[in-house]
Length: 129
Image (cartoon, rainbow, N blue to C red; front, side):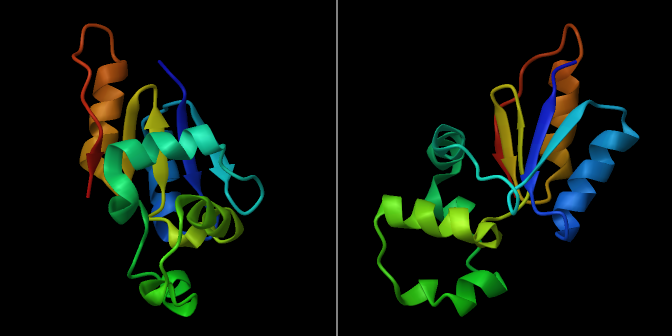
């Protein structure tokens, strides 16, 4: 079974839900606390390509509201810098299993990741909430 990466912050209820979901199913996971370690630019670009900035940024989050992001026009490099400093701007958790990606709390996508990891199953594409 392939390793599943969960990108989030430890105090996020949805990141804890993802971690619990995979642990309960005995799936090997690697939890990356974005408060401790930045996400590699190539890694975040995978999510941007699949979901776009609108799907990736959590416009409802307190971090987004407090930063006044609704009123700012930022270039991609500036957005990446802001995300690196404040990962709660993202719809967390970001989950990756091979080429499959999901954002936010999305059990259906997580189940598809587990199903595709089983021998003889078809590979499912990325999904979002």
